[in-house]
Length: 224
Length: 353
Image (cartoon, rainbow over all chains, first blue to last red; front, side):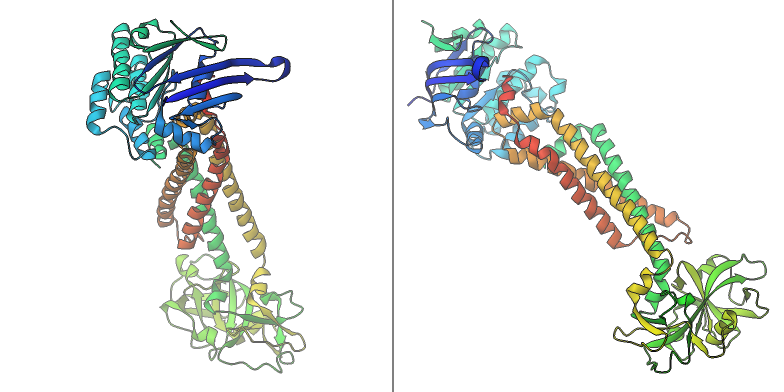
């Protein structure tokens, strides 16, 4: 069973003459254990795609299934629980709560999701891999762009979600860190059997992907 | 509470300013409430010390003890038990050598009745004859001493202060307790006049005969000159302060919430339940209000210690509880205003759609 499956997804914003069709009959599938890259220019519909598979908004039509369960018509409360338990978001900006230290970002997850999070040892190993072990007591305001991005990745992985959705996860990273992060995504997918979907402009991530899709004018096509 | 504490800890100056404002408002509320209660008590201290339930007055006296005069005819049917006492009231100016003049109320009482017998002395003894008086402790605070010979109004006779009485004020003026015969003299009353009124500790006491009419103590107190107007003024000020605190808390929390909407959108996108964010906002309001009110409470205690005893302030546990409780209620109501915005936050904004 696919970890995530989209069928004939359409998303239309606005009404009448101001109507914009952001997604057009999008079909998509990602299996656990795979890294999938969604590439494409700005305005192509990548963010809309991400918000729909992440259950942040409902499609105008079509079906979205996570682990075989239809989620496109779930209530806000249920989609919240779904995101907390099954989906890890890595966002471009404003990823971290500014008044929580790096350590407290994980404590917040513990407060709302008491089971199934990474153990202390696993978190320490993850932070070591991301090179943020010595940042535990720092606030986001004290971190560089790259450090913030790596902390955000650690936080998304901390809840041990089945699906990881990332919006430009390497935007602030140098080539060395891109390699490490790309490898980390691949390791998480393979070793922890997660479906990793990366929406990105960054071609440096291509080598870590199992599948690459291109989004253009709301239509999704698989690269050969 | 986790998010609430962490944010306050991180934004110390911002939240410190809000706490300071809540503290100042709380302090002002405590101050005004203490003054209101203190002044109200100075109007009714004596009545309370007599455990007054009913007051019999001349029905044409506009429910004013000092305006009332009851004569033998009016009191023909009066039967006084140990719970009733005659009382004569007349305003006087107390003068004594090397002492400042004081405006007071002379109360004439009978030595075989409860008002005389129940006097709670803090110094000296009760009067034994017509030339002796006991006085409210306020006179002692103003330098009067036991044994002082005082003149009342322009009388030539001198009266000796033989005791100081606790809680003996009526209508904010200190009381001089003396003999009912002395009252008649000071009042320049007709020979058939008996007293200004009757004070009864019995809630069922009733005497309605000729000009005599019985009033409930509440009615009597509300008609004390200036009493109702004074209390309403304080109540209005305190009420407005509560409303101002509600507005301040609501506005601050609303502005802070609006500034955090992007953070909330990210947290909602990550599945943090809305109730966690709502609880954090209400928790913040509770922490801010309790901190501000407790600081206000401590400063108020300090103020009471430093305030001269002549200032009529009474800071009771009831005021503390009502003040803190009222502020807390305002804080919680204020925090509910931004809650609506939190519940409506769109997690899509986290992606920057």
